[in-house]
Length: 198
Image (cartoon, rainbow, N blue to C red):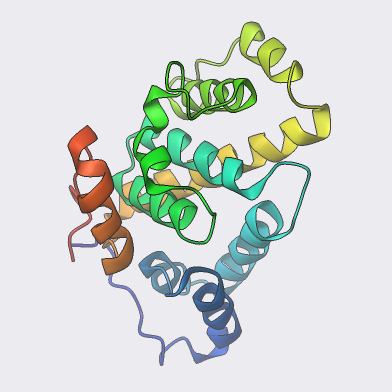
């Protein structure tokens, strides 16, 4: 049960443009938006940042961005964001569900390239508390990515770091689509809905 009651879409009619963009991008409006909507400017700023980090094409492929988000969220322990990033990566991100499910086997699984391994190791270290990124993580990234791409990767990690804190602290109720993805594809690796029940 969420710690703060989400507002209804009708109560947040001034944010309909934000909700419509979320539906186009994800197929639904995240519950967290109805909580953030209590402060409309925060939701608008968050929506714009999300669009820049994940919605605007960059130098890092979108499927890798979703894998980075998934590993960072799972490393942080946020079950809500782990399900969201897995479902989004396998849905709109173009990743095979099997690759998402095997994300923490990136070091040895042949589905992952050396560049993906470097990015996911960085995401795993950055997603933990305290942050475990060290110089060798940066050096490995630089073998595969330029500095602009590293900024894109870091922006994904930071965006989901914010969301991990928000959704875990607020006990945001998980929507049906990512919940089903988690149950089908992630539960065998220890994922559970946890505090994110409706």
